[in-house]
Image 1 (cartoon, rainbow, N blue to C red):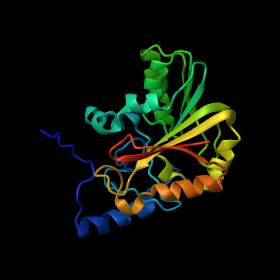
Image 2 (image 1 turned 30 degrees about the vertical axis):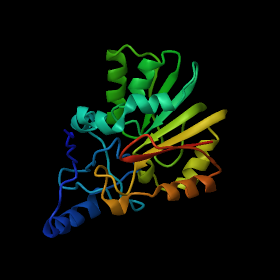
Image 3 (image 1 turned 90 degrees about the horizontal axis):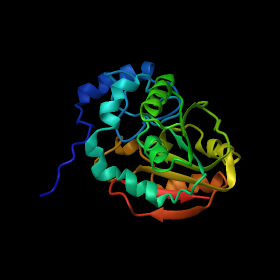
Length: 241
């Protein structure tokens, strides 16, 4: 018997879309972070992700998003432990989770690899406060919540950058990742996971990026594709050097 996975994106009527458009036009701001597989609203009346420059959703209430971002049903298709294993993290590595949200991946990595320093990076103060509280509660001193700049990759030097369901929210991606490349160690890698066009999960199809588009942009930013992993049912999983 197959498990039915219910997407958080409900069908919206034309009238509702018109109302949403008016609300979103004045409500959305910031850089990015759909943070982990659920639609994020600037307000309860604005459930669409609008992927154009200047139209980005805020995640300024961490407690509000925990139930969605950390929904146990997500385990079925996100496969966090399989993803972490595929990243081939080494003892002593420094890892940054950009757009960490509620720490879906960063907290797991910190727990699985005590010798690894994990930077849970996000632009939202509420998320940073939540991440700090979670790291303390779980006794994970190697998990560091880090507030980053919205338009520049303000990270310390790291060996791996993980970007899950966040890439399509970032403005000026080519310049952003070109800047991020300066923060990578000589063995540094960038892993990007985002929704495919066919996925029943994720933002509306018109706001998704094709895998091929990500590869082109990352090439322009100075990276080369190292791995294209067919691991996840709803997302592509690309690793760049």
